[in-house]
Image 1 (cartoon, rainbow, N blue to C red):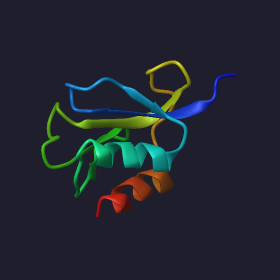
Image 2: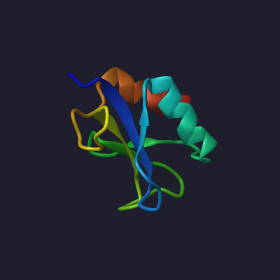
Image 3: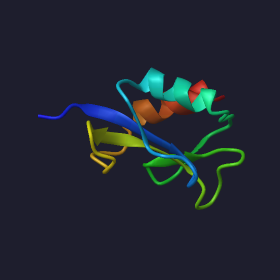
Length: 86
């Protein structure tokens, strides 16, 4: 069975990236220049300054080797991401 991974994509100009854990995914977004505050967007991403509307940040759980949605972030995961950019 494929492992769960965190999938991120900053707006519609970046490629999807796969991360083994939540902290690594958060750090990758920070390295790309994402700044808070973040707001949840329909359970599969966030908006942030510069990433509004259709140009939002995708952030969800997929399966290794695929960018398809496996599940949205759980409430505790969402909270951790938002707090990391507070």
